[in-house]
Length: 424
Image 1 (cartoon, rainbow, N blue to C red):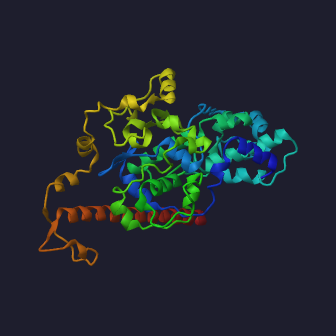
Image 2: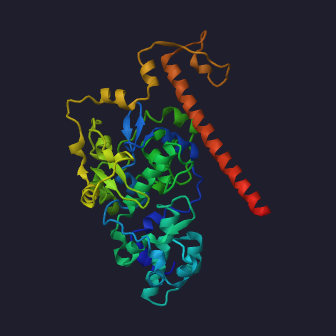
Image 3: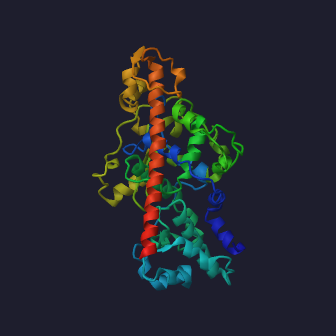
């Protein structure tokens, strides 16, 4: 990248995020499936039996990616692709030729005409910077799992010196939430957005997810760089991930955080609506007070907003504006007399634990398998603890089976399309 262009991308605040891209690490699909199993799209939180609720907070996302959550609302123009003169003015002629009247452009093709291009003046440097950032948006943190990026982001890129003031991180986190919603409901077989953030989040908070030492220190920012190339053990983490939590992965002193992460802390202390290009998503800080407010123990939250449900929408722009500004999470916590243990047992725990909690022994038919000799089989009688372990093991194996089946289905579909394309 030419120094003039690089300076503009840096001013927009994207260089920290760029530093975590392109390391070539294969995605950990079983881990993502295991997380999706515990995700509730009506609260945007993971429900863990022993711990309660946890989620990716705005501060978490900023610390992991280097993208700030907060700032000006993104502006969109869904008819921009029709205005060829405006497109040429903002991005130069190459992108206008690529569009050819379409709403969006392949981001791979977008990069080609600008690659190693030396701008002749500041105006052309602005055009190249906009094109680069547009490509970055479509290929990473606002990726919709296609190979295209829409031109409707153009108004937020118009003034290059102002790009960094927009809430790109909030849009990216909304994209991540909505993608996890789809996966948890089985509507999608893969994650959109910057899905690697879930892997890093799990490594930082849920210690058994990362059984080998990270490559960087706790002072590594963005924190994704700390986990490049780590190895982990699927079986152990699926069995025990809910029992060991690091509640302060970013430290306990907000003043020591990088500036962009520090600016995100106020959003984490709220119930706040995050606006994304494919739809908005609530972050409910009151449901994860140990993460959002730093409380020594979890608090019982009040009910989620009705707009978490698909049939309810905010009725007017003033309501949207108010929700985007957010409400203090502390106002949405139930009275202190509420017992979180009772609340967790009623609403958070998975029901099979209720059946086993007070039992001493469980009668169960066990397979003749060498996998479970440690479960002390005795005429098909096992302890309640061992039966619980069996259920957890079964859930983990189901996740692996589901993941493998999805990969096989995707490959079969690809081969079919390849054959049809060949003979047509």
